[in-house]
Image 1 (tube, rainbow, N blue to C red):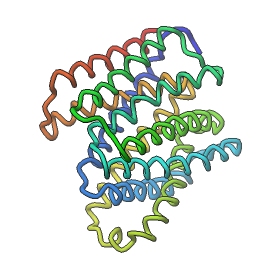
Image 2: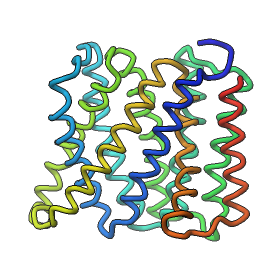
Image 3: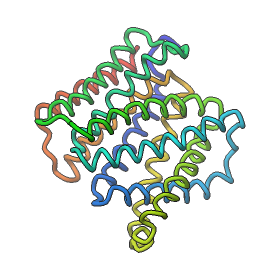
Image 4: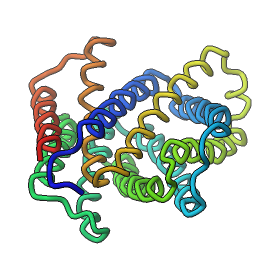
Length: 282
């Protein structure tokens, strides 16, 4: 990888994906039933994958083990996410789960031939610190089952990010890999949902399915851009830069639902922005 900062096209792709990531998370946060909202998103992902995959170059066979492992990891991710939110505050748990994986990936990169330069370490650390500070600034840290589910999900997020970064490189077709992953994940997740809550899912109004389709398009676009970027730059740096979604989410929350941006949030935003600038320049 080049010693200079991240290429502008890579930076633009990841930041664009981060904005999309913030958008679909706002949709999920607005829903009253996180299980059904997740099912709708993944159902939309299945529909989009079936529509688009026939027109794309198929991923290389070498990536299929990574695809299968990714589907299992993503089902685990959504399950742990729902369980955490059932017993703890999203405002605390979400930044906690998103802030630590880039640091874990930076450490793992040493063993996978992607050791970061000192400046990039600083950029990753600033972004992670900024994201984590949003959780630490809350009055009550997560405890009990919520903390356990969040800690387990940190490991799952780091694993699927590393797995998919490698899988996307092996595939030779990062966007087709993303669609195939969403298809496999959606089939697994929806099979379980159909068994436990199929009647409730079937009775949802068509408007909810349309929202799920839009959220799926944002999620697929976000992750597809990130995986493409991981074929161009170190996985840990891209994973950290992707967490600027928190920054976009704060702005959207302020503009769309009127959430107040207090000093703690503004300081966190400054740390995240500083880390992103460092990754661009060095």
